[in-house]
Image 1 (cartoon, rainbow, N blue to C red):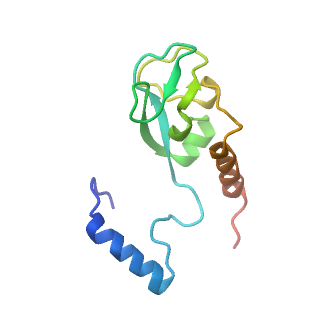
Image 2: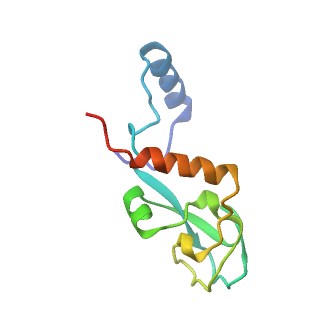
Length: 125
């Protein structure tokens, strides 16, 4: 079901009750990642330019299927802050991880690596 809005005044308390009384996870699609918010060039980017993240002047986010984002090496929006672009990128082009220099020393990067490791494990049946 697609809704272009959320009714947080109704949905949040309902989710809390389901979680507390029934032990149900309500904000999850189970044990796998379904979508990814990817970084897309908001303008023509020049090599060496520093990305300023979502809400800034350099990138915006689009939702993509997780398997497509993974297979194409698309850059998660959360990494598109404070890192340099390595080549010129035209406006409205999704950024790939190879297009930027991601700081692999950050806690965020380590958490993402852990998430990806967990996601890649075969499902238990």
